[in-house]
Image 1: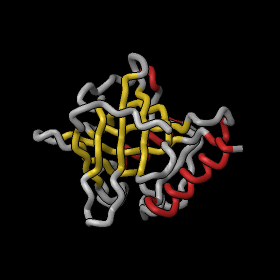
Image 2: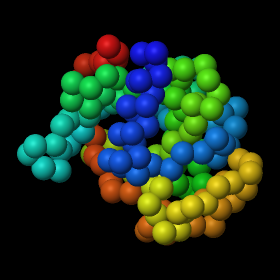
Image 3: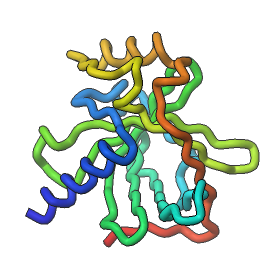
Image 4: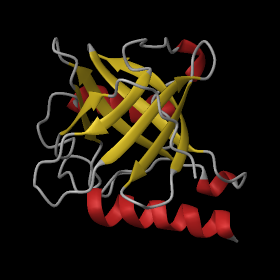
Length: 176
């Protein structure tokens, strides 16, 4: 029951705070993914406003193709996902999948475009469910979904508000 409640809280947070798009399909296979070693680190968000909760993000190499990602905002429970990178027209997107449950219906994918600046700032934007480009769209396969994203990759409306993170000096996993 606790796992279910945890998933529901993450889903509610995602939908109402960030408006993330969830898909039963990833953009590509994890087997075609390569690890971006610059991404493997512990990160903390740079708040946009003084009263914003800090987000702690820890990214570990899980295997040759996948990442283990821990996400914690404020005192809330930590969300754990697996992730892997898809590159579309030189844009890197992390496919993340909830792994706190074995129920396949609850193991949907959420997507983040990211880049790391020359000064080491991680910039992320979530694939937004409220995007006029994506609103109401559902896809029947990874290939169909990926083709749609490729066609619209440069649309400024596809991804949500940018969040920035800086690397921590020490690694923190942040699991409750």
